[in-house]
Image (cartoon, rainbow, N blue to C red; front, side, top):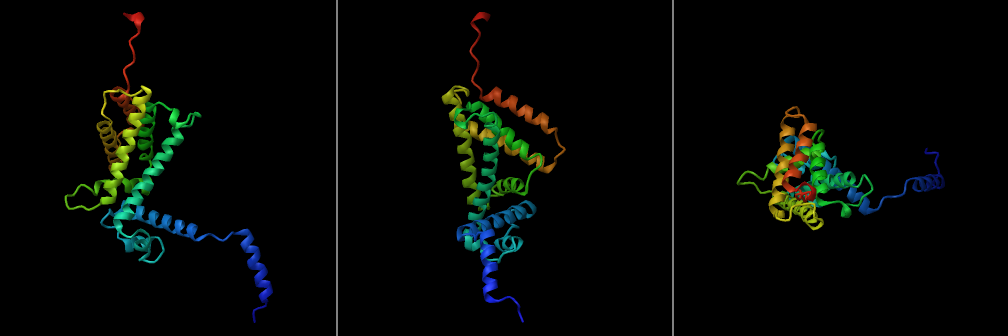
Length: 235
């Protein structure tokens, strides 16, 4: 016979509820979605986009096999969310690096933001997480002519728009060349970081990453920075 009376059980449950507040339905859903996205990142990094089925993602996350479809509606939508989450993590790291000295992003010269963002990308791929690896794998999945990864295509477009906005900010504050087309510059920067990231994923010992990061800074300055006014005293 259970020695705990109903009154006793009620008191225990009450104390537990005070110590551990009940999570809301939204919090539970968010936690489930994060677990599914973590599982998706692991599988995409291991097996590629084609090998990461919704059923496998649900199984890896320890949920029902049908839950990913219930939450995301389609694999394409899940890929889009996964790509956006990975990009958000990189953006957060860039903001943290850019504001380390107390400046606001809005007050930081655009050329400095370009340097910081590129350096943040390269630094992450020195020791990439599954989410970082998955981002490059998903990008590569758009190469085949029969591929249908609309979500990644949309994420690519948002990424290019982000680069272009940094270039435009630099042109407004005078730190980036005014004659540079932002859309063209965005493609060049995206190609730089993704090509270097993909190379590091294939062979982490291919190059000295500290030298590569320094070379990126020099390249960005030479291509994007506004020319300094000549010193009148030197003429």
